[in-house]
Length: 150
Image (cartoon, rainbow, N blue to C red; front, top):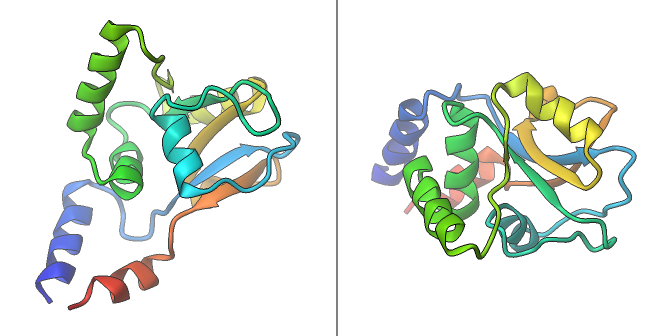
């Protein structure tokens, strides 16, 4: 029970509606297959610079203030936004990697996704339409919650 309460408080603290669900997408015209959690992690943390197709990978982040951004990184690597920002600050100054493109607003994420070859982004599942293809999705919420119970 305490784990469920923690998850609920985490969700409420993020400002993310209980029904929001981040999924990783690419433009439908891209030839990429489904990606593993490890591949998505490596792309969004700057470890992979190319997709399996050989096309340069161009990850796109939601705006810094977006609750979806916090939820995505929490689900992906169990890190909050401040930790992710610190990670990128260290890498940026060392010159080892380039952070994802930073969208200034949520609608810009989809526009960039559709216009940049190799673009990959995360959006709320409800935003996915025929122009996009889901390449990675987290375990369904009900399954995550049932596994979290002691």
